[in-house]
Length: 341
Ligand code: SP5
Ligand code: ZN
Image (cartoon, rainbow, N blue to C red; front, side):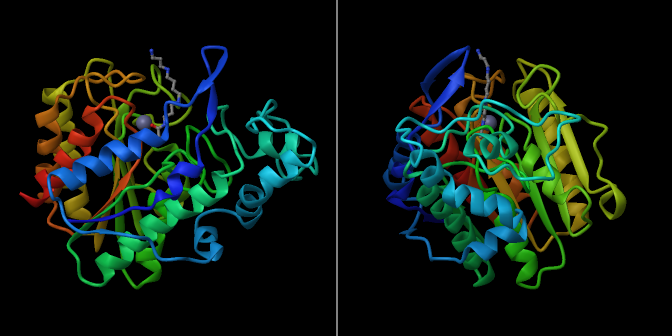
């Protein structure tokens, strides 16, 4: 399987608000280094650089004003003489207005962020747009006949919706690639999200759509971030009704419960008969993940790949979460090797 990778991810190395303190993000550059090292040490396949794409490709799933905000946020923040990471400090909850974009960067940060885990630094935009380009390049390879590809995206994307960032995510790499698949002539695409956290952004983007199915296995939002989306009763709306499937699972879920839910999810996708599957590949379901609460072990990730292969469709794997333990390389690559087995 080929891997799409770029060093540009290094330009994004930020801080987050955690347990009431500003700390280095769990989502750090060494994650991508660890995964790339494993790709190379097992000889997974060729490693290629991304192609360049215009920002209009991102605006197929994000609003134009949001993409413009991401592009300009650091310049607006640093123009005020601020040198530390840009973080939001006010949010337009419930009856506050989100239709008028504030002129002040502090207002914009609040409007376009769902949490304080998405700091913007000087290098963030370059890393973010390159990450989306990795996913677009992977999808282009599928269109050119590859049966699978791995976009080693960093930062991740699945918490980012049409008009907000959150949970270390800025542009929704998986959704951008899925939309590109449709724009390239596909009739249907499915996104399977196996990250520990619900892919609220991807769900939100495709919620009213019948041409993109979203299926997610994740920690129950009653107990786990992102708390406000990912319940079982969210099944899509309008034309999209019946094309959104959530599998919220309790703390402590191990392979017995996980494998059963995944098999069910993959049967649902196979029945939909998509032209391609985009897999939001998070490996924070691992037993030793520092911020999550499932109990999967190294060999369970091989089983995930085998089960996804059972759908029988081409697959683009897009890296999402999975935090800094050495095993994230083993676990991510195990999914890919399981798929190829
Ligand atoms: C892409 C991705 O995986 N984003 C995850 C963002 C999670 N951010 C908040 C996590 C809060 C976790 N608190 C858990 C306490 C564990 N002891
Ligand atoms: Zn996650």
